[in-house]
Length: 337
Ligand code: KG4
Ligand code: ZN
Image (cartoon, rainbow, N blue to C red; front, side):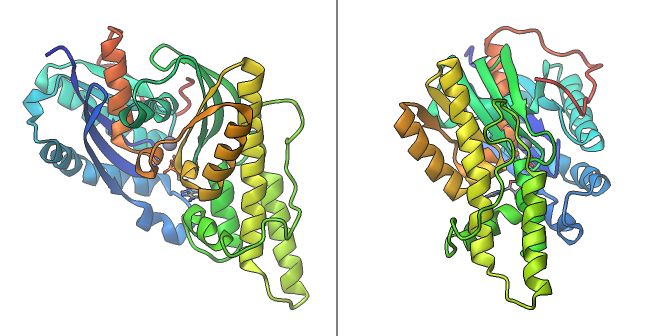
């Protein structure tokens, strides 16, 4: 039939993701993560990630094919994250995708990682409204995008001027000795804490831009904790986690809704690893309801980095009859949307 079977490869950070889609239907979403290898460093080590991608690549492709119940020869097109991301990590995925496309004589689509985070929602909630606003929050990015058309027109409106939102979660978790990655454990601990216990700063809340800043918040948390420790007082971990988390999600949802209001768009999509945060989901829903905005958030497995999102965008580009990339496609660590 005319709906293409697309295999997508994602290697921009620490997940080796291989997804297979048939149009908007998800057939496989295989992941191999090197996150455990980075835990003792408290953050992703680029060289370790690149090597892990290389080791996991062919097995993850084979697993995705088996999960989807298709043969490599059935694939109509390959898609790969061309950027942004870690240069060495991206190169592994791009080289692999080129090899598969060349060997099978099938088209190759190099895709943008951020646009892919937006596009993945189509696999769960159907065609994206045009336009929609997207907020992508992860360990590597915190971006606000206006998306008239995910295949052809994705406009960046704002991003973080320092730490990404997920990075702030990871760094604060480190200050609180909660391990890596920090987001899920802060989310959990915050449930027993009081979000109003400590008034942490909301950098760039009301400056009128669509940019974020989280490094001041991270420093404020570290100073607060240090002061407690110096005074010989116990650190109320749950209250710190809840108050920090509230500051982050307050700013994120405030700015996302501001974009919707200013641009007159009534659909907001949230993606990226931090979109798994339970308080972010709850506050975003509350504020969207109040503003008459429809909220779309993919299930957590589709929010974090995965191959399905790359396949989804590849399928979208193919469906829009856009020209495939040529085999000189570079990995571009700072690829703009
Ligand atoms: O999208 P992702 O898997 O990878 C990239 O960074 O691109 O996002 C990972 C980030 C990490 O910083 C992690 O701490 C954060 O997402 N994260 C969360 C939660 N789950 C993952 N942050 C807050 N709350 C969560 N429940
Ligand atoms: Zn990502």
